[in-house]
Image (tube, rainbow, N blue to C red; front, side, top):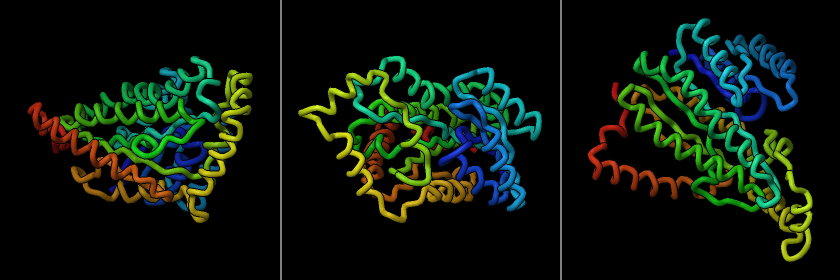
Length: 297
């Protein structure tokens, strides 16, 4: 059955790939457009061209997660056009690269705003509709780093993604009684096919970053990048994340997995997350809340 999707951060990267794959599968996809430089016309044209070529229903909508006004307008546009939103994909994110100390507090707040608070803005706009409909699906594009390994120089981003994961877990239990399911998607590292590294936030305190280029941490940044690249198989393709969302859409309502891990590096995040999720089940059982871990149909 065709579903109506709203995907954040769908100009490039995972978001664009997921929007195209889901639309090609037969779903109606609203691809949220945002650009750091303010001009999204190129991405809108690329999405439209894909739709024409593949006879896919992919539509673009301006969506700046840092603005509640923009978020509200995007949700209203989808509802006015189609009457419903079935799936929200919290995909938009922004990475940083450099010694954690070299980023200002304001930069860290911005990363948190994009990766966490932006999701809250969208939930405030979309969830009232989903709760009235007594159905829906929230998909959170997280990071394998939350339960895998945190490499140096990406600390603020990893912290924000871990916060997003915690937020998603709380929402999951609060929304099951309303018929709304949750899936947390935790991709591994991809050094090609996305703009994560090329668009990464640069240190706002360059003098501190330079100090880390001297001993005793001289070369740590280069070692981190080289080591990360060595972990990623040469054929690793971020398309696997989009394919995972297509597969996820095929699961019947009430049977959506809580977590999936499209991770070509096999970093072990799935094993650690399994322990955390098992603890969650046991703790909810002790609190008498076990019924809130399964969606109410």
